[in-house]
Every structure is written in C-alpha cells, then in structure tokens.
Image 1: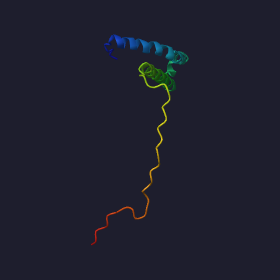
Image 2 (image 1 turned 180 degrees about the horizontal axis):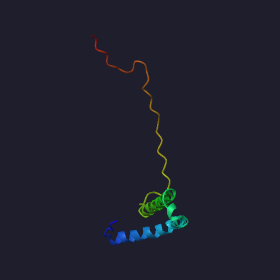
Image 3 (image 1 turned 30 degrees about the horizontal axis):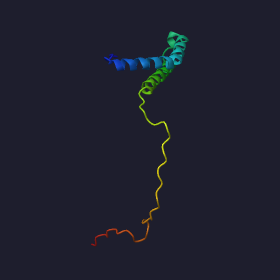
Image 4 (image 1 turned 90 degrees about the vertical axis):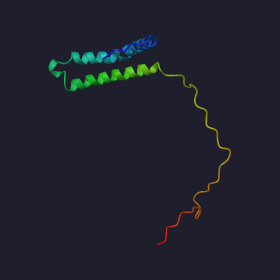
Length: 108
C-alpha cells in the first residue's frame, strides 16, 4: 500500500483516526490474537481463517466509523419544526362519470 503525502491537516486527521481506532479496535485485536494463539498450524486455515477475516472486517468498519466521526459537519441539533398545515381543503374533481374526454377509436 502506497502511503500518500499528507498535508499538515491530513496528518492531524490521520493521527486522530489512529488514536480513536487503536482504542476502539483493541478488544477485536486481542480476540484475534487469542484465537490465533489457540490454534495449531494445521488449524489456521478453514474456519479459523473466516473467523480472522470477520475480526478484520469489524476492525475495518471501526476505522471507517472513526474517519466519519470527525468529519460530521454542523447539522441541526433541534428537532425539525412541523410542516405548516393547509389553509383549507381543495375540492376533488376526479372520479366523476363522464368527466374525462377520451379520444374515440377511429372508425373503419
């Protein structure tokens, strides 16, 4: 994986993500380490491999969450105001027999 050149702001953001991720993923990393330590070499693939991948996916999800956490912009904190109500109901014009003018079929 190539490491991109980061601006000072991006370096600060990368450090923030790393700090959050290190704390958030600690339990997953410990669980993964214990899983691998408990298996013999012959048992590392198959079901154990899928368990390791699941742990890696949980860590990756936490990384994305940590990245988005600091990027949330403004937004509102108060609930949305209710929409204004209509002044009066409009009369319905649809559904009356004979109210539509359908084109007649051409005669042969």
